Image (cartoon, rainbow, N blue to C red; front, side, top):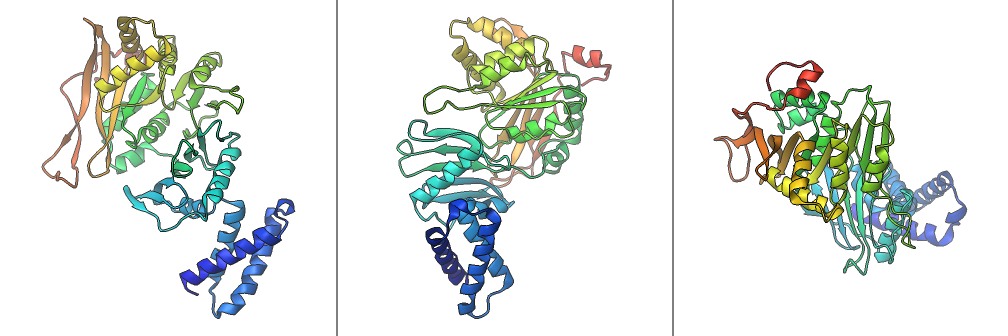
Length: 413
């Protein structure tokens, strides 16, 4: 059986099942058995049909009815890291770092919207014309953003950042040459010594991935509170772990739970560490205040193009949460809360690299003082299409070593 014939067979069985079977009263196992019988009956008219093709036909029909249709096939491919659906006819994927168009499409706009409602409903959220934008996740943890018409002009827009089946580890970062073994040891010491670390970078630079890896340095006997828009952090081996997730407002405009609400609530939960997936607005003030009130060792991420850009963005975020606060007070708050800023970047060859690890040294003469510890330098093997280089240690020493000494670590960083 050719691929084209298999596709026609799947379509014909799908339409027959949806038109003739009582789907609302059938269990998944009953539906699967009916589909299997239909596939075997229809295959009799095609000559030789391999067992693999029969199984594939059964899976595709069942997926189209009870699963996510085309999405199920895409999500099974571990090489695909991102899915972008721009209406029913335009599907793009990122595979091995490169964007490409997929030669598949949804039957119609209604089918796509049915799948969107299924995805959103599974996470206990809702999306409709009154609430057309929602951030949610798939059962496997993959991050999903949905925008419905009329906000999205050409049909429902769905963007999925796939969830890695294996939690990112520092060993993997070393394998990808994102950091060096020396940097990995330094980060482990800084995390264990409860330095407040902020990870910044552009879209797709690997901030959450890096946060995931670094958070696994946290001692396993500590109480950790994670706060995210959609829960995707995978912190392994910690028993005393509380994962909190935001909630959108319902159709009547009530019931919203924001990152700010969760940070405030977490302070009453006796946290030893607070890990905030990403700060985007006024919650930055609450996060900084948490860091300044005895919750050392906190970790978070934010969007920025450089370390200095992150500082100015934090100032703007804090102003969103407290418009009347003087700029000097905001800068002092940032300088006293943050200890280390790590900047990541996605380079011209689509590789993700750690570009800078910088110490925040305090506040003087109206400016936040920065002390770069590691900087990424390209070497002679770099070309326009391939980046080659490594994180190099600067001549600057770590100035604020009090937390290291309190931990009993007296070596120089």
